[in-house]
Length: 403
Ligand code: NDP
Image (cartoon, rainbow, N blue to C red; front, side, top):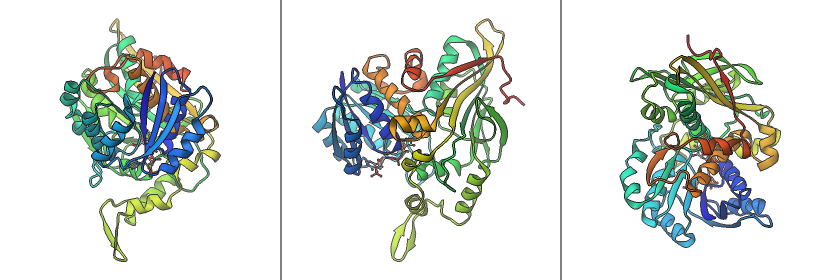
């Protein structure tokens, strides 16, 4: 029985709050805090139920360490679930160290003024969290998150040596809008417009943005054009599983989406530097976010499924060749019925709640700063289907990734 603070009341925060409220034996008290308190209040109202956890709300500017420390001292939570934006990771971790609160997030730190993400900034907190006796769990959404847990599960139960890993992320949903992103548009567009990068024989190979693509087949969906992107969990997974010789990440995009993205870039709307407009300084990408559909409003008319998984090849425990595919499919409609959010928020928020549950029940409590694949995957894998994300395995099939 424990008290948690959820920071961020967007798409993912909404799902986390719903799922924590569904597990009152673990989460006895929930505080929802964000920049806009009215959103926290509406969410608190939606999840409060007889016999459920006590829910309260607060406001905080999570860029401000002093405000965060004051928030933590007011509420004295055991754990903060950070589902604000990646820019806030470091201030929240600083405040955790000052106020003695454990930490969990779903995306690694990014500075606002450079579209660049890597774990080094957060890994640098390891010793301080260790010395403070506090646990920090990094990247506990779906990808990063379940992708790392799937990999750890494969290593534990099936492989002696994993040689190739391909994380495959398909959203075959249709929201009926000409163009919209499935989570925070600013973070999403920054991620996709970067160079691609993959790991091969100990080196990182850089590609042009969306340069490499191929058709991959997804269960219950069929063939979809899938693009090689850099994704943050590749950095920690190749470090934690050094037998892996090649690690890549693929995500599907439709032609219509890519055409819009190209236009957005060509006309300068993806810029993240300030420009002056009528005497006011604006960042074009932040302005674009303000006029694009809000990802939280996409759920109602969203049809279809997401399918995210890991395709792994290598040697099994008896040193025979093995290919393995483990995945989850998630329906946008079902996610919306349960939480009012679409499957992209759902598949991120459910694992964040499970990670919090793992910590609060002592299964993933270990002072220091950790990526999810460094913990025992089994109790987390047991919870996934119970909490709405069933997983499936296929063995010795054509993974479609080994050319
Ligand atoms: P949203 O934009 O929907 O929500 C972000 C929330 O954070 C909003 O409530 C926003 O408040 C709040 N916020 C932003 N800045 C601050 C601040 N300075 N202080 C306090 N609150 C703030 O984003 P999503 O819910 O879509 O995404 C949340 C996180 O999940 C992101 O970090 C994203 O990268 C990550 N993610 C991870 C995935 C994974 O699989 N690992 C997949 C998808 C997302 P306000 O409403 O006032 O703007």
